[in-house]
Image (cartoon, rainbow, N blue to C red):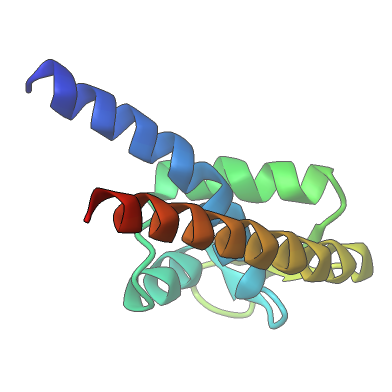
Length: 117
């Protein structure tokens, strides 16, 4: 890889960190287990690796945004995650922040593109 490609990959990874949190929280109003989250997010265009998702789920649970419950009824036990009340409130606020940042960035990018024309 070239230096530019490496830098783009690194900066893209930084951009994705926050988007993954919002994406994960958006899918946990109903209980989901890790692999189902990976599949759902991928279907919706957000690629998340398992080795990124599971530490994130543990961190969000430690921050009391999620709670988890083991389901041992199936042949394979699964840990299901769902938003807590605080997680729901935090997610709603993050959505507002996200939309405000996205609007601001859209204006900046539009201005940049218009100045280049």
